[in-house]
Picture 1: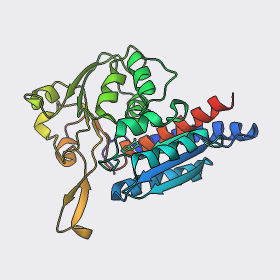
Picture 2: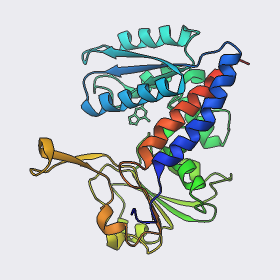
Picture 3: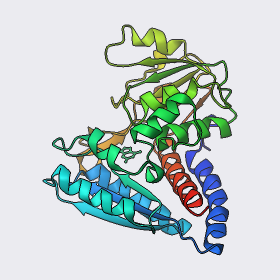
Picture 4: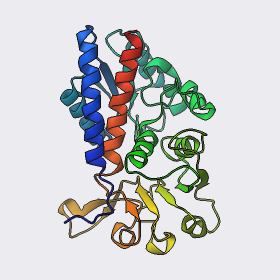
Length: 295
Ligand code: GUN
């Protein structure tokens, strides 16, 4: 039997998707088919897997999707021309440019080119600004939005909690901290954002009622860094070498799950925790974009 303290991201994502099916049906009844475009540049192995999963979920829910795969050497102007074309396409309500981009492409320039109304990733500076301001008309980035939903639907009390976020990336850590410190439902927490230059990171972690690990270091969070009963959310996906595994490597999170699970109050499994929620929130953002366009 699975330990009772697991937060089942797959089940919660399924619940969300069930809610979306009804909204998609309503849109179709009005002659609107939600549409999402994926853009992938280069051959990053993990990105191929992630985009594949997102395409599959679109198909399951009845969202039309198209994927544009560009060669690694694609220039910035070439990519921007494609984005302009997708921005102008009335069949498309969302555009997602999969990160990471090859190093010669400037992420800030690329994400600023996606129309803010189609920015279902929440990476455009206008949407980042709306997040900071607490303006709910923007799009929230999918992974932190999914984590907030996961906490809310698992009955975790976020208001007044001490939250420690590990990692200051633009995709998870920074927006996660911004989201949970808002004076809003399922937020209103005291948030500490730790990163590679933080002194005595363990001392911060041990104070956390909710610990969110998103720094991309394999099994960084050990048992002695977690307060007994704390809620632990593992965002990491790290490939580590393991001669005994098929292919010589395996995936681990940012949390040493076997050591931390017995002392955590609740913990996300990995896989099966945050990942499915990210995809569910992308679908939700796309449906919202289509509803907005259909008004
Ligand atoms: N790479 C890892 N996470 C994400 C995400 O949420 N969106 C995009 N576009 N790329 C990612």
